[in-house]
Image (tube, rainbow, N blue to C red; front, side):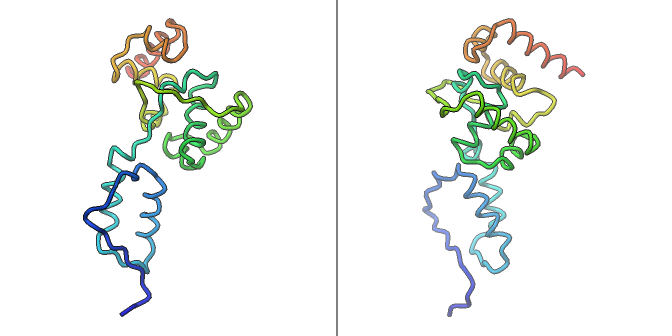
Amino acid sequence: MNTGKKELKLNSKVDLSFLDDLKFINSLKMLKEDKKVELKAKLSHIITILESSKTCELSIPISLFENSLSALELVVRYLHDEHNLSFAQIAQLINRSQKNIWLSYQRSLNKHREKLQISESDYSIPVSRFANLRLSMLENTVCYLHEVCNLNFSKIAAVLHRNQKTVWTVYSRVKKKSNE
């Protein structure tokens, strides 16, 4: 008997390799909110599992820093162009205003019209690290590379294409801010 309601049947052998796409999670959230849909599994439980899964964590390859753009411009451009995220989604991910994200994207286009060159990289930074507003994008990057990846300042300087003294200064600022 067809009641006119949609049903989602979940197979126990579902290939979940595509789940790093945030659009899929957003689609599940929309299904959950739709009162006409009966589900055989609780969507809220599925969404919670997917959101906490490592496969959903976006990361920024360090090789991006070879470009002449600022850290914020690189992150915004990468997430918008490579992962097709909207400015609103990017703003939410990195805890910045949508206007600031849009302006950074426009500035990046003015400075560098070509598509970003992404090469193989030994290191990548989770996007969630950039949500800390107490630190600048560069400070978050240097802090992550030094404290989590255990890179010394000369290696960080080489990877980020910055002067070693600049990297040391940025990290010392991070330390001062964390002591406040």
